Image (cartoon, rainbow, N blue to C red; front, side, top):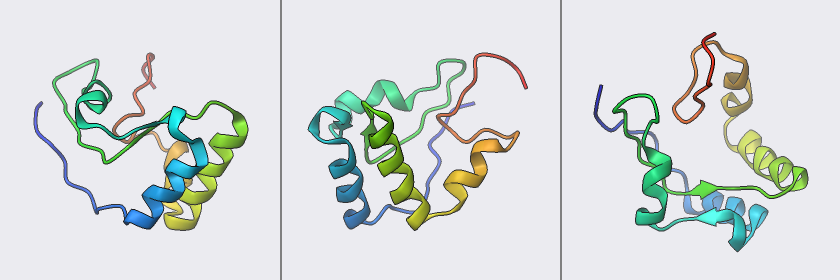
Length: 94
């Protein structure tokens, strides 16, 4: 399976809030540096993201999730869904 899925663009103000939540050390926004994070490790699926976040603490994770919750409630609701969104690949089968 190959291809790129299109999603609604994330508003620039939200991206800036996410960057502020994790700081420069927890943000990857260069296309070349993000490429490995956009490729599935199990198959040929490839995605496209505007930003990769790597929180360094639980406080940073909380700040990212607060921003996500404000913007899109489904980010939290999907976490428990059996169908995993792109990027949430488990090492075991459900």
